[in-house]
Length: 369
Image (tube, rainbow, N blue to C red):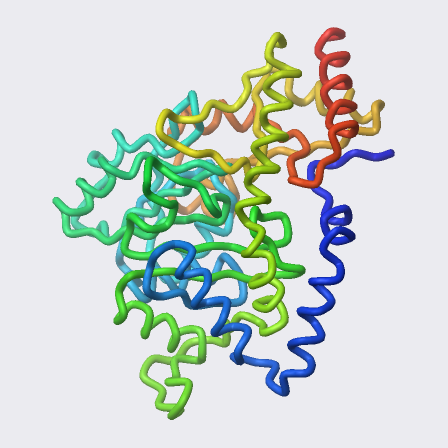
């Protein structure tokens, strides 16, 4: 049996009745766009985070883009973020007309090195965009202090951190707004694309609602600033409402998988994930590190275990961002990680016997290096 990093079929089979009921609910509602399911999900997702506003959009990239625009970020501005992230984080910044500015990540946990932010701030800096990577939170206290001192806004990229916490604070509730993706692989995933931006600021939420609807007021069709159609689908919203009720159970399942890996691989020379003290990790992906990463991945194929890398090409090295002028070696930790990190299978419905197969295969491959 082929083993991959992610598979949704076991979860779908267990939840099939509820998922199909969600589909029937939407189809029988008589409203397929911006109806009761979107409103209900927005209210429930906001309540889950203890904030006042959630605006559902069509994908995580637009959750970031519209979040930036609603916070006043645009052409001529700079947004400080990281290069060790999924490209959409940076694509969203670029799509607003702003310029992404990168700081490096920390070697032990792969998260934004907040000690580098101060030196990256210029008179054009408008926003700090931390990425809560792989399922745990960036250290938000120094970041917020820098933002307050320089008059900057903070948008949290929570695409990989649904349900994660830092102390008593949930990911997405420290900054001025936070963006989420509901791509199917996510901790809270739809059966297609979806996203949302949450905020405690009513004026930011109002701008978000206009931006996702061509720039119009949804009731009166008064257009202030032209925008695009970026609405969350009713169908995905209803499915997400049902799955939100199980989010904490998903997180518990992911942590159980992570504990099994930690036990099964503890005595190997793989560098296993480190949870920052005070963080509650949700393990969107289980990223390990080894200097012979490529050989390990190739040899695991003989065991019918097929893995991937998050992420093999730092964004600042991509051709599309060459104009930013980051030379090789400019982000040394990010670049070193890109050659050594890879992901083991991680999803809450991963059967223990299948995970044991992966652990055994990894151990056998490591013994042959």
